Image (tube, rainbow, N blue to C red; front, side, top):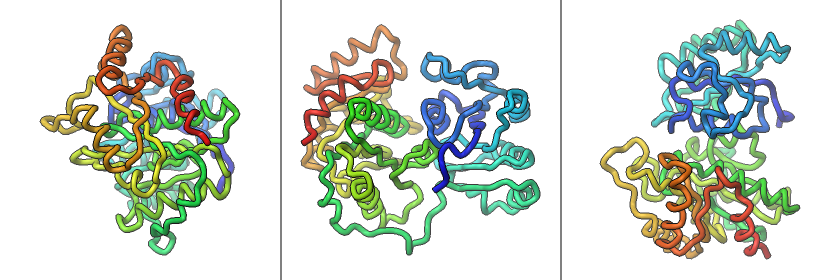
Length: 357
């Protein structure tokens, strides 16, 4: 494994930053150990601070309208870029013609390219010819590993003695990974050993030590790979807490996820992420999100484990609305409700800490 950080990154998110299709870039702006993020590319927000756009908090990560501007700025500050990271996360994971051209431009600058989409850059003859010419390294994060390197479920997860917390969601692109990281970091601040199990390409790009990329796996090995990641974290680090990042949601028609984590990750408790202002599944008008109470019932029925708290994604809500919305949700489902992105995860973690043996 390469030492972290690996280099200086320009994050590509043209026409998608601060939208649901930009969640990979969002994760990298908020936190990453794998790269030093220099800038973001999205011409719609050029000249602005990425953190200000995303969370209303300055991050000192500027947004540029073009790769040329981003490279020039990095060079002028004696921090030359080494990586071009595709921060797009569109439905279906396809690389658009515009994005492909920008990848070619990045390779022409000699930048290494990391991409988590399903269109594998390493199988594009034109781009690979350019990469050979300019000395660029190409990594397709979602490219499947050889079957021989995958694991089948064995039951060894029963040896794991750490408290296992799954962070699931009521939809895709709803903030599960961000909430999981916040929980892990607060536990560490309290002096407890906590490890994150990443389950997607963004967590890998953020430098998670233990994890898998579910979107790249043959279905037969999904359960075994989840189990192996959790077991490996326990075997190597012996943490007090293991937090498992959820994917999709149980009842999302296009991204049904979560059952594998419940069945194979075998969490002791669940935190559920919900966007109260989101009425339909991401990208699928006409497909209403089932009520929060029903989603909790389904999770608890499938897992025989409790949902102990709800965390919200406050998209579509004003600052004045958030407290009353959280209060109403708490009364409806009888569980504590938190906006951890706005208020931090300290109070939530106090509740979770009570489950540590």
